Image (cartoon, rainbow, N blue to C red; front, side, top):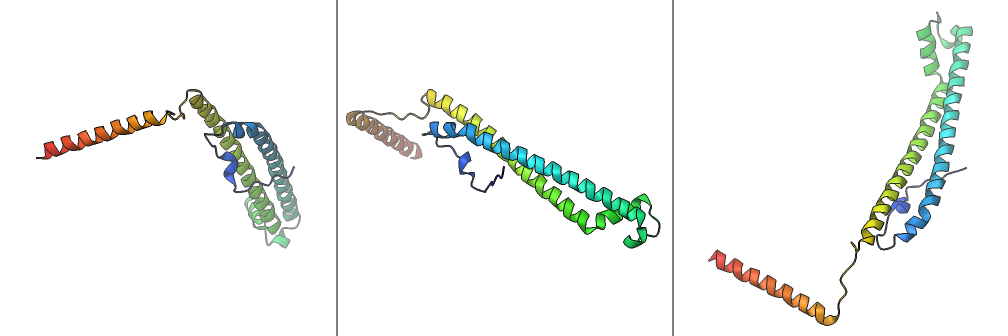
Length: 165
């Protein structure tokens, strides 16, 4: 499976007024990224195996013909150094690092999706308790509330001026 993962983290955002939409997509998103992560893990393991093959092949070649690699006496340290300096080993090592990075990024997406699930659960709990509700009254009730608010503000202002005198 080819898993393009881009910088668009929009799938992690949550609209608290439309909690059903991210819930409907959560399981499919998680499945998709779990498969991508598994594929990345497989590529990473294959890159590690390829690195070991390159390392073993170079080690045998160096021990068989040390002079071709500029080594007089093929000691263990000299062979290890020659392996590390070889271009094919460097390329295989770079591929290992690249695949590890891809795997780590996808694991991070799975962790983020776990966090999103927990956030959705908590938001649904809050919504069930009318946390996000807004009072809805008729026009007369709204006017009374606004008048009471103005009266309180005015009284505080008058008290504040009396204290300052």
